[in-house]
Length: 110
Image (tube, rainbow, N blue to C red; front, side, top):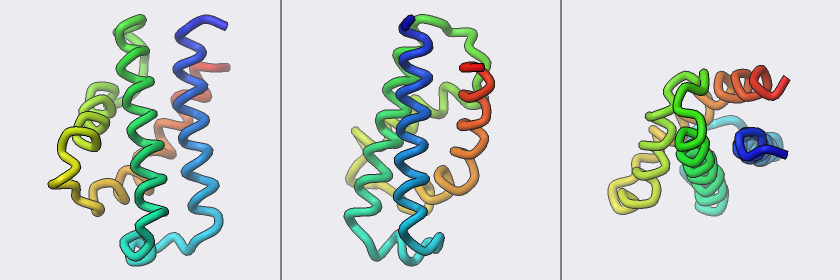
């Protein structure tokens, strides 16, 4: 398996994990706020997505993924800005942006 495919599959795996977390809970922001374990798990998977994207961009800077640099910036925000983390931003990523990213990754893998 080449590295590009590996990083795409790593990102897809993290998205699948987040979908699994969501499948066992109400899709409500308030529930996300109340469940520290859930928030931590989601944040970790988003950090993995950002790290895999960072490595992918070093190999293939022209990969056709929307907001690829913002994905890396989000990873940096999660890791370095932990003390100013805004859960509403994380929730917005999960609800609004991950479905788009998932589709783009699946298209690239196919």
